[in-house]
Structure formats: structure tokens, C-alpha cells
Length: 207
Image (cartoon, rainbow, N blue to C red):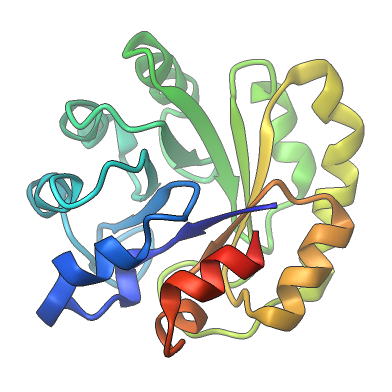
């Protein structure tokens, strides 16, 4: 299983040094929040562009926004590996087409309370499915182990439709093992990672 550090909770006062410690990660996860789809705000494409200059790793852009179409062009300019939109957002079909049209991997995500069946109409269009294991919008929440049932449901579709399964929220040493057992491909890790005394070593051991 691979790790995608979420820099939402990274220490911003020495961010460049932090990015250097992430060089063993699979990709860098960027949580983009609009203050509407979720009650919090994070950062926009200009800050993301600055971050992209600090790393050679691919970017994994997670749009927690109501109107992803308004945000996709700016983030597409960063040439990320993936841009993920929520199934609960507006214009999901058009958003996925816009992402794919930019030669970027398209991802779809769903909140904990949203049934897994809601993403099935889009499954042929996506390269990544992101299962939220906390309520989106804030870091530091406890992992919802019941969300791993969605991961297990997805596994039967994975071979035919060729997407990776990612989880986001509350991942630590204990829940990381549960994710691996359930068949998760990529785990987003935020708060727990940046509490480590040696981030680089933890990443090496976790993957």
C-alpha cells in the first residue's frame, strides 16, 4: 500500500523542509475546500502552485467544493496525477469529462453517509475512487472503520474497471493495517504523519 501525505496539517512555517522529508511518499495530497461544500476553507490554486515547486512528486488534488467545474482549469494547469471531485457536488459528469480531457486521472469521492452505489454510474470514467473515512472538512478526526465495507464492495469492480482505491481521514499506524487488509491501494495520511519525529523513516516503514 502507498502513502499520500496530506499537507493540510503540515507545518507551514518550514514547508519546503517538510516537503523534502516526504520524498518517499507515493504522491502529495492537496485538500481543496471552498467553505461551502464543507464548512472550512483551505487554499487555492496559487498556493498549490507554490507547493508544486517544492516537490518532484505527483500531486493528488481533492476538490471538496460545490462547483468543481469552476476550479478544475486552474488545478489542471499544475498537471497533477489526479483531480478528484465529490459525487455530491454539482455537474459530476461534466467535471469528470473536463478532467479526462486535460489528460489527468479523474477521481470520484463520497462522504461517509453517501451510499457506494451513487458512484457506480461514473465508474467507467474514473481512475481513482476516494472513500472518505471521516467527515470531510477538518483534520484530526477519528477513522470510521465501517467505511472499509465500501472498500470491500469496490474490490469486485476494480479488476474490470481499472481504478485505484484511496482512503482519506483518520489514518494512523493501527488503521493503516486495517486499510491494507481491506485492499486499499493508497492511504492519505495527515495529522498522524506530521506528529512523527522522523517523517521520512515513518514513510519508508509504512509502505
